[in-house]
Length: 505
Image 1 (cartoon, one colour):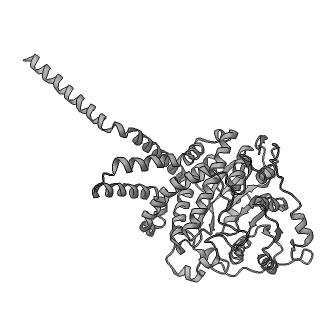
Image 2 (cartoon, rainbow, N blue to C red):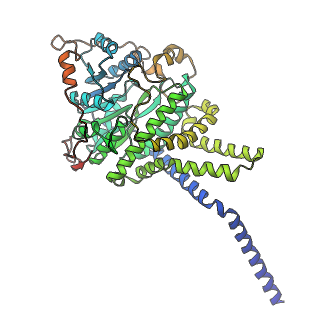
Image 3 (cartoon, rainbow, N blue to C red):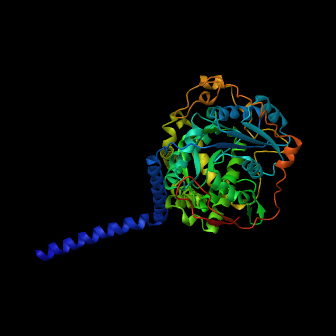
């Protein structure tokens, strides 16, 4: 009897073990994908939690401020609208570096009669050259570097200075959104992707003191952190070719390599023009992807990436490997999960939409109506992650802006004609979680901007005289890479300053 019981027990154990083996054999082919997917989702969750815990930085720090705006053939209506929002917040000086033929914008700025605003006519040799010309003229301790199509919401100037109470902070990232996002489906898609960046990724890196790229739409720096590396910003070469775009990533890593921290200030919010057409949207994404690859490969080659916190390392590596991870996912779904039946195709599409919806929660809770463009966003994410990024990787050393042209005013899909009036936009449904555009217009919620006093001793700054144009263009852009520049730590208002390091171009 005991023998029979023992044999029965052994048989059951063998049967159970065989079941485990059968299950393992069945799922074994999917293990690599399952493991990769699990890692990706865990890293996403890790950054989302860290970002949710990050809070705006508060302090009483205030200093002198200089706003530098490189403007290349910007639509004058857009530039003047943005200029009103900058003036309203009272920076000590605003330096707008125009291209030589942007005379309409120059004349309209002069007509304001505001001694704080200096328009400079300058021969642009890429955005970096204009930034260099403006930064060298700037006198403020804190530099605000802003795109010519970016407006500020109330409080940006004040809030963006607060992190500099820490003398180790060299750069500050600002919160970003799309201006008049409802005027185009592609602007709504762009706003969705921007929200994911600034709610789920950047705050986590900022809390660790190493934002990987401080967006040039509005970037804020300590002047003493920028001046020692300015030539290396203007004269970056990648595989023997001068870099045209990607100035924001370059400056971010030069400042990080100098020993400073780069942080994020969510209470300093800016609104930028984005393309309203698919073709311009794609061009912009190609340029950004090329810039990212050059920036991050340089950071790896110089050893800078290995010195930043883990959350920044893993974010950069995941961005670099996006075509690989997305390619594996799409390949798995296409060749292993879709069996040609309506049920198989439907289940696959449902999973794609569900996963994208979960990752888009931070945007959807602020703009719930955008749930209806979820399929478009899911397609765009795959399109960006595979064909665009693969193309950008192959052609990353092809230089150019793509959406700005020497013979055209305004960026592709980003002219004033692509917008609606402030009154018409304000009459539409409110943008959840985003300050209304009327709130950042001086003639709107805050009333008309009072005229700036003009001091007889100062007068209207006419920076475009022949002498000034010659002075602005007197700093030639070398045809060869700049030699390595030792970066000495500049004095900052505290006892501790970053250790001087050598930053090479």
